[in-house]
Length: 274
Image (cartoon, rainbow, N blue to C red; front, side, top):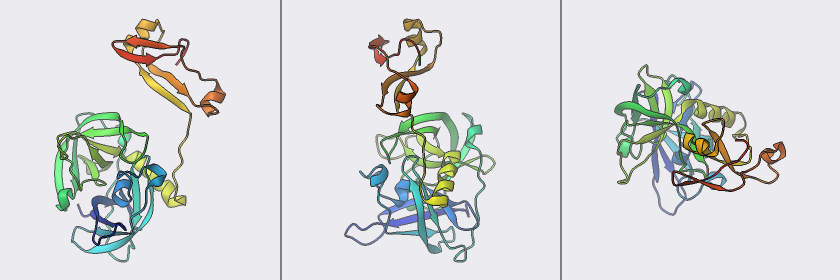
């Protein structure tokens, strides 16, 4: 818990005081802290992707309640990852160990430490409920992919905090919940730590994160659809749209010739490949 911190972000919105509170965790001796982009920017509040604006000030509160002002290093709204840095001479730092999110399995025990509703240093436990989820993002027009689903209680203020495995290694950043009531209902999601580290390294290096772009819109090919179409495979990606001038278009990808109804789901399937 000594490596987990509470973040207070202040924005210029016409009234004083912190308007955003979340969680983060120290990842290096030189002061770098990982969190969510929506904790330190306006991403997720109507401003998505490049439109997000940084907080005017970010204050980090450590487990002993000492507070230090942090510098915003950068953020990746597409993966909802934010990075801030504190001066290591201002406070003792205890980085948390990072794990490997590719080794996460369904059913393994996990724990979250964060500041739900401002209650700093709160621990909650559960299991990994699913892996490789694709969910709508709070912070961009694209889905978050390879997300870890957990039944560990996650509430407002947990955002940006670490999801630990049973060995105390961080496997994800607690990012959002699915809820009809606005509070935890047992369905929480964490950005894989491998994704977060990739973003962090690029942000530290030059302040931006780069992604490959193919230019395809696809739909999952199910076994039922494959059988109805007489395809030789049971799973794949059915091409719905190819963006003109995109790498996919130049490579010769193409869409199907019409709509096919399979189990009451309207899918556009390519007749000869996927």
